[in-house]
Image (tube, rainbow, N blue to C red):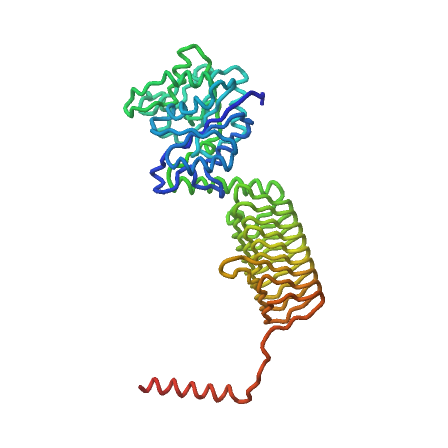
Length: 453
């Protein structure tokens, strides 16, 4: 790709009424990331010097999301939605004096690939004054058509205005356009709203450019890249497209997915090679997994890091702040939150470890709970190296268990346990000979009397 100065304009002003949602359309997630963030991420391929996001409905929320994903983005507001050309025009002041290209993307179209954007930039470098992105549609339906004559984009024709010959064209308009910023805004200033909807359409700039003798070109991409999201059904379809791609990418990178169609990734999931993912595993945002890890079935991970050779699950939950060192083991029905599990440490059954540090080589018995919350504040538990925490131990934080220490099963630990010590904190067992039989007989008699009444 030829390097050129580039700016990015992302249109994110629409209401999305067909989503039937209080959330702005562009903030609905795919792969755990808002649609808007996907568009911004795609635009990074061109290393834009300026990023402008055009907001409208839910402007404050959209602006916050844009700046969270792209710090420094310019936010402009389209108070009245009067068409795509009108939306792009709102970015004019933000790009005043910018000498370079501008590319227009859409906040509800998350899958435009970096390769496609680079192809558009290459077309500009090859001499096209204005570049439109098109796609070959399996079912062109009512899409606008790109009419190419002798290798040049001659015009964009809306379906309702197209002739029968033009309707047979399968090259359809995506709406993505690239041109020098000054030319783009100059052409937009000439767009008329003399149409049935009374709106200013960005597609009209192609005819205006050709009327000036400028060179317009069309670049094509796969139809799946142009998938726009307007309904919940389309959102679900987009999620399916995203997951299919991510599964293929993971397997191509050396990750084994035993039942790929049952595993769901976030946009930022990172997994090292030779890791095995069993069926029905869900990765929320912020998961990083080293190589040679095994994630067993029905586990859920979010905001977690898992070291090389570790194993997780089945039915485990890793919450934000969970950090598992190499060769550690988190087993069935174990939950870890904001806790560091040392190298080779194990918590294999029915355990909650929250706000804690577990030293290397330690063993956490079944049913152990770090009691980290007092109803107002969180407190931390520290477990040293090679400690053995007996089954059904309650560790009432703040508390520590030293290196090589041991807690007896069923203990409630409320004070620190020194290195190498044994802590027993449970009531003394009492034996009452024959009392179980007498008590049972008494209860049965009472039940029988109640039935008689």
